[in-house]
Image: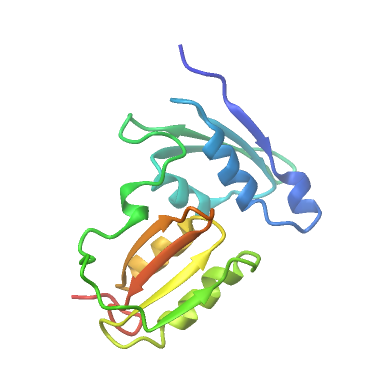
Amino acid sequence: MSAPHYDLDVRPILREGGEPFSAIMEAVAALGPGQSLRLLVSFKPIPLFQVLGARGFEPSAKEIGNGDWEVVFTPVGAAQQVGEPSERSASTDDMPRDRPEPIMELDNRDLEPPEPMVRTLQAVKTLALGQTMAVLLPREPVFLFDELQVRGHRWRGTFEPQGHYRIVIRSGGSGGRVS
């Protein structure tokens, strides 16, 4: 017998001009083993499909009227504990542990989304091939992981005891894939 869905309606947050991503990720972290997230939203959240897909969830979306959508994110398999970062999100497999010291460190903990990601990606562009930088963030940067991968960069990240997330990024080039 499967657990009932965890229901989250982010339409009020969106109507007030807010950003519902942190509420969604908190809901994901609160899921029990095998539990699905039922999300009510005022648009089809396609970027979220990829983010939660990387965490082991399969989306099922249907329009429910007036432009609103119901999306159920169901865990696929038992490969990872719900709410735990995926192996891919924690690091890239080929980031050497003996990487060079970061040439800069950004503190993006007090910024509102999407500013931490925007600021981080701008800074990564200034790195020469193989240089590293460290970034402090208020939470695990799930959207940033995909952007770094697409641009050919490597990273390692971890939650720090103080409660923030620290990621070290090694440049794989100037925004392109590493061949």
